[in-house]
Length: 506
Image (cartoon, rainbow, N blue to C red; front, top):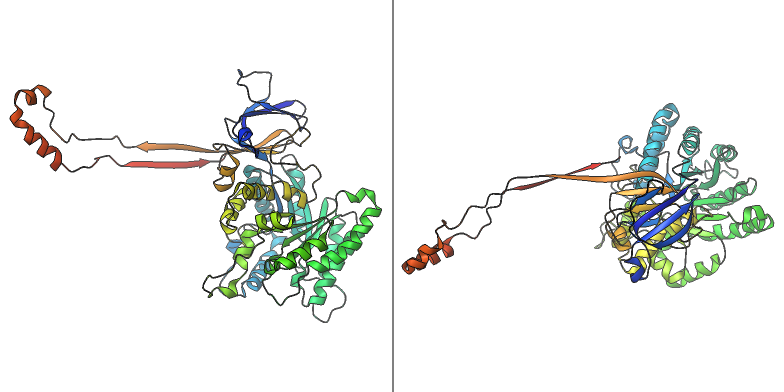
């Protein structure tokens, strides 16, 4: 199919202009690229034309996981969570570490869980993802081996960008001046063919000085390799007394980006991604402006992780009148007010850090509308871009569409949402039924099938039928007729209606 023209017809597009949003369109694709967008004209189906009738659904750019953990998904059943205090993060690290220790013993389990996450993601409309794979003394290279295999197996449906990631400290103790075995495993992992990004979580280091050294080591390691995509899980706290490490990243990035500029082959794929950054929620307007000015032209994108951030952070404030704060980056507000690039992503699925939520990025938009109190037309566009265009920018993709509606030259990566007609519906109440298209090829279809059993309705008569002429001939019966009509209970006598819904994934 990729070598021929492919037409998506009878579809609504996410134009901001209401007069265009309400129209139906046809999108012509050729060899994986959009070549034409025209008004839809109903025609008889052709046996020689490869065509998908969207039946009035909405077409959006395909979704993207800009931050997801492929190796530690679906392990909640192995994590015995008992703590109810601010110690929960340490507990999550502990039980997850115990689960990771068994990864090397059961690679079939790693493969099965990873495949489940990829398949469900593609069925939601995801065609690209940054998959964080942990490399340390507990997990070894077991997760990386499986991820590289899955990357190849799923290449036609989804680009899996592997980021080798140090969740555990690079320094073993507070006295260490040199990094320990976790760092040396990371160095070896970066050399593996198929690895495209590198990352760490500096906040897990024993001291703030070692956290800064962690950042410097990651930049140094990237500079010694061909990797130009760096991802930090950073400032994951709500402590006003903690030093924001984002400024250390900016400091190191200045030197790193200068080396990129000297090598034109690296210049256009450079990207530094900052995940979580919940500490920044405590910034004043002046501090936000200072941060924006400090970033300037650096290729930095933030990724908010609402499901994890809201679940893990703010527990020490549980007894406050309003409970825990909204501890995740305010995507529409910060994007609009400070012109910062902020994506959203799922992060974890069914583990100790995020026991709730699905793999669907659009669900984050629905959640975000409530958390951010954001449902205006502009808000909805920003939220949608956060899980599509901005997420693709965050992972360093170069073939990113300019807007939410297709234009000639765009890569034909789409998700069609069936049964709805507007972008507003897509964000506020996304449908289950979807079609995923990558490079002009249909790679997944998901449909809801409904059926119902309705009991036969029985409506008894409230008045015994008598021929109309009886009342005409005997007017004396009229008062009796009126009394019966008034005294009869006004109820419908409808039988019970039972509705069953079955969801089938084709």
